[in-house]
Image 1 (cartoon, helix red, strand yellow):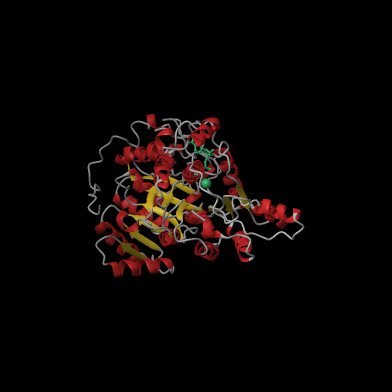
Image 2 (cartoon, rainbow, N blue to C red):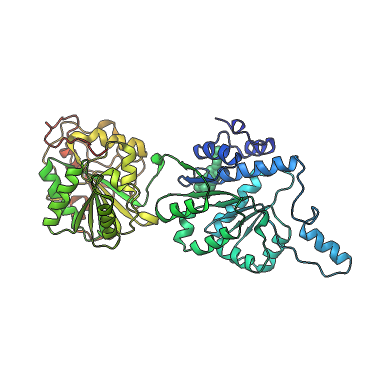
Length: 495
Ligand code: ADP
Ligand code: MG
């Protein structure tokens, strides 16, 4: 796939070559042709995936084509900018008549830094276009400077919502000519409390506009807003494979059998740093059974799966949102898209059948930039499944052992080919890149990966790994390729 194949204007292709871009990123491949055709877009894709160009290239393309077709600048000033008008008015000895800026494109961003980045990128992509100006309107920028920028009647405004509202209200900006509205990092704008400002800005733009919304997630509030402000949008969700979930501490505990798994789960659920948790099971029956068992054990638990009536599902989720349910025991299908900020922990009681489900599952915690913990309870026979997940997420998941809950099995062979690097996704990793920090068979020491948690004080992390070195236990406990004789093999009936 090339940029030429996306049908972009030659002036833009030249700029991209100059910028050193050789091929469009996945989000650009999907977004650019659709946006050129005029469609609204709802896009979720991780940071760094090239979203700026995904909305800016098709928009610049349309401006370039329109300019070529000699379309008059339809701002009612006979093609002159307000600045030129003001000058000629002054030269006639008149007081210049104020004309509001009439942008064709508006990009809303949550922060000043981001707005400036978008403006810089726009200048880069549009460097060979004759008349296209992008300016940033930001909080904290001197007012006269902004007035001067607006007086040049830029085609493209990049703005943070608050400051833009000020200018709208004082009549400095008129959106009647607006063709394209972009909400960049929409989820962050909502997190920052801009919802009312956004609604007001959107209401001031023409119904005929093209709307493109970009967000890390289309779950929850941001998704419903996206649906409200777009028309028949193309929904683009770039595979979450590369989603790093860096704010989520992931780990694996190996277990010998079901009873070991249940004891460990009970123990982990007593972590003092846990607020609410989701426990994922492979089957609906397990979801029900485990929820019952946890309730008897004194946890406020509830099941959530596809066999339940919608009313019951809603009640359970309400209970979760209100904090009455502390432990939700759910199947994949039922838990997709759940957005409850109090979920601090996700447990994979069973590993998901597909690696992408692992990413969806652990994404239930660490919402909106919070920290989260994702723990997988893994049978010795399931080592390959862990590796598949690691390959998919391009991350290694550290193995952890808790004193008193060590797996009994002894390893016949270490995990040679895993390229295992405990601590890879830890914030306070002290291991050098590539350093294998687990113990070699027989020496039982391991260098460990430094302190594991940032002062959570949870009871369960006081095991031997604290003192450095989780290697011994894990190596002794792993037995890959051992078929384990069934017993807790389960079907995936809920899919
Ligand atoms: P996002 O908004 O998704 O976080 P950006 O639009 O900020 O990502 O782009 C991230 C970086 O990737 C920027 O430095 C940008 O210049 C670069 N980039 C974007 N698209 C391409 C591409 N097709 N080829 C090479 N680099 C690109
Ligand atoms: Mg971006």
